[in-house]
Length: 136
Length: 136
Image (cartoon, rainbow over all chains, first blue to last red; front, side, top):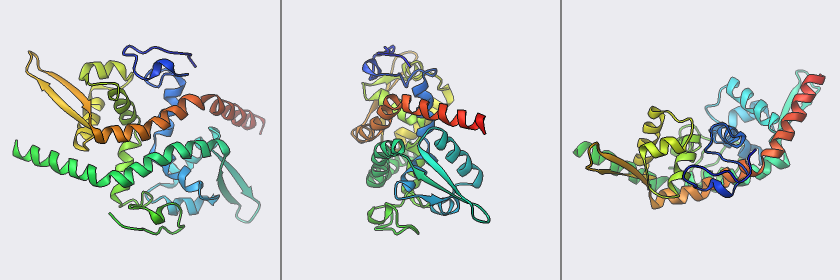
């Protein structure tokens, strides 16, 4: 990680610990991971309490088994969720959010709130854009 | 948009205007769009001031011409950025953030801050995960 990185334009990054605009900076690679819809949806779901794999799959509509597996594994490796295996037959696997994951939820929640609250404004913008396109 | 949607688990969504966990809800489709690394990086860049297409391309390292075009067009349609064309030869195209876009930047900035500040904790988690994997 670089300290006090300057970008060409000096936007935002100059007083920061990393530079998300630089493709090679590890913080950019981390942003690529967390600016991901499945991570957002899974982490905010687990913030409500631990959940089993199959319950997560039902709750987050549209996620495939493979994508859910991959995303949870990455989230576990990144320290955002923990995985617990119960020795039932068949084994029960459940996931819980970690304290580090909770810090990310706080940041992510503002995005979800935005999507839910600003939808009418976005819809209006789209209608205006499409009407202009048709008129041109 | 649905009012006061109940999800199967009742997590988060019950008092909200939309339900991002439901694949068919328009807010989920909007989240899919904004939980995207290029949107995050472009919008926070434009929050520093209007910028021309080529300057954006240089500032946000790793973005292709095609991806930049597509993302800016979607952002314009969603009302997050505005596009201005100057009649120079060749024409100069520049992009500026809108007031709606500024509300999203506030929400997005918390994600970038998280990525830049929490990187050491994520690194430590990855080292622990990989060491455990090797030991198993």
